[in-house]
Image (cartoon, rainbow, N blue to C red):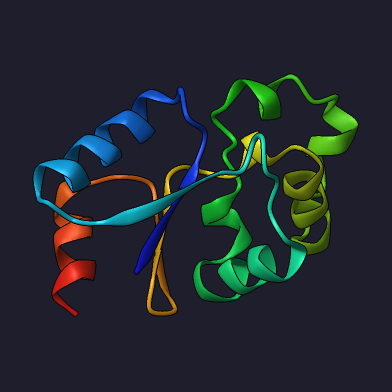
Length: 115
């Protein structure tokens, strides 16, 4: 079983869900804005992809941070920010059999599903 992590009303999430639904792929949805995210899971994602990939710097939540919080980012600081405000996690995150991908591109999903 795969799990799609993200925020319900995000446009990119809607595209990812439509793609999965259109291909008849079953998945569980985890809204990390309402349900949060476990620190251990986030750390596992960071281990696989890197915090730079997972931190959504383009989003409004990150851009509204004071410069002091954005300057000198480290893995520890980025994880703390994402735990405190999960909307700072890039979305969607698709997790399947211990493998993950962040963001949505149809070719990326096809590659992950063929493994």
